[in-house]
Image 1 (cartoon, rainbow, N blue to C red):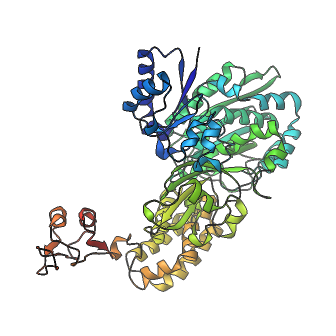
Image 2 (image 1 turned 180 degrees about the vertical axis):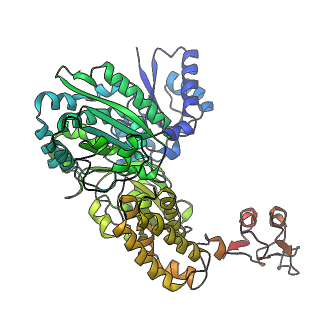
Image 3 (image 1 turned 90 degrees about the vertical axis):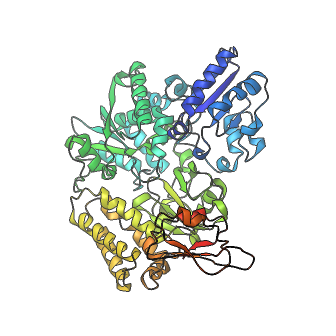
Length: 606
C-alpha cells in the first residue's frame, strides 16, 4: 500500500539542475530500504520556484525541499521516509510553518512566493505526472469536453467565452470568444485549430512550463474549439528547442487517442477531431499568427497582409483560429466553473489571471501566476523577494522585445492590459525582467532592438531597414558618438516603423526605445552630452580608476591584467608599505578583471 508520495519537479529548470539524477537515486535508495512498495515517486511539471531547483515535496505531510542534490537523497530516505523526521537543512526556509501543512496547496500558499498567486493555467503544474493521462482525468480532466459534446451547442460555448472576458494571452489581448465566433461564421469544408507554442521572447518560459506540466489541458481545449468552430484538425506549433515539452505532447496525444479523446467518434458522439505537432526552428517572427500558419504549411515563416484575417483565410487558406498555450489552458476550467467565476477574477476589462516568467535582478526567479491588476510592486517585493545585494529597483521590462520599460516611479502600476498600454508598455506573453541600478537603460533598449533586427523576416521595408537604422543610432550613442538631435530623430523613426510595418513584430519593435526615451531620457543625455554611462555598462564610455588611499599595493590586479595596463606609482598611502598602482586607460581593454580581483575595493568603474 502506498503511504507516501514524493513529487519531484521534472520541468526544464529543475532538469538542468539535476532532478533526473535525484529521481534515479531516490528509486535506488527506496528499493535498498525496502520502501519501493510504500513510497511512490511522481515526476511533475514546474512548481514555479525555478531558482531553488531541484524541488521536491513529500506527501502527506507536505514537506517542501529545495536545492536537493543526488547526495542528499540517502538522508531524506533514511530520516524522513523511513523514520518520519524531515531533513530541516533542506526545507524551504522562507516560512518553516509552510513546510508542515496538510497538502501542497496549503504548504505553498503560506509562503510569500505563492500566497499572492492564483494558479489557474498552472493549476496542475507541479501537482500531477504530465505523462499519465489518468492523473489529469482524476483532476476533472476532459470533463469540460464531455460537457460541451453532450450538453452544449457551439453557440453556447462561444457565449460562455464572451461572457467570461477571456482575452488572448499571447500578447495582443484579443477577446477569445470573438475570434471563435468569427471563425464559426465562415462556411467551409475544412477548418483548423492552431496552438502557438512558439515562445520566442528572451527570458520567457510560460508556455513551455504549461506544456511540460499539463499538456492534456491544451489538447482538451483545442478539441473543444474544434467542436465549436466546426474543425476536424488541430496543429500545435512548438519550437524544437523544447525537447521535454515536445516529448510530453507526443505522449499526451498518443494517450488521448488510445482513450478515444482524439480521433473519430470522440466519446461516442460522432465528433471527429485530431491534433498533430509541427516543430518550429526558433524564428521569433513565427509567433505572429499568419507567419506561424505559413510555417506550418511548410513555407518560409513570413507574415501575410491582413485582411483577410485567419478566421476567413488562415491555415491552407481555410478558416482558422490560433491561440497561445496559456489561453488554451484556461478554457476547460471556464467551461466547467462558468463565465461568472472567471469574470470575477482580475479587473473590469482584464479578466482572470496572467502567468509571468519573473527573471533578472530578483531574488526569486521563476514562474508566477497572479490575478490581472496585481500591482507590479507586489510581484517584485513580495512574490519575487525584492532586489538582491541591497541594490535599488530601477525598472521592469514587460512584453519582451515588443514591450517597454516601467520605471521605479511607476512600480505601483497594476499589471493589466489597459494600465500597461497607458504607460507605453504591454503585458505581452508574460516576460517580466527586473533591473537594478547597475543596468544601463540605453544598453537595454539596444539589446532588445538588436534581437528584433536579427529576427526580422525582412519582408517589409519599415521593419527590415528602419530597425537597423535605429540600431545604428543606438550604437553611436553607446560609443559616445551621438548627438542631441539623434534623440528626436529616433523618436520620429520609431513612430514611422510602428505605423508602417506589416506585422506585430515591426509594429512593436520600437517600444523598448520609446519607453526608455520617455522615462530615462536623462541617461541618453548623459551618453550624448557628458559622454558618460551612468551605470558603467557601455564600454566605450567607461574607465577604471584606482583609489590610491585604499590601494595597499598588493599587485594582485597587476598579475591578473590581461593587457598589462597596470603599473606602480610612486605614492604610498599612509599606513601602507607598498606603492599604489595606476591603470593606463590607453592600454586597458575594460574587462573588469582588476576590479573583480581587488579585495580592498580600491578599483571602481567611472
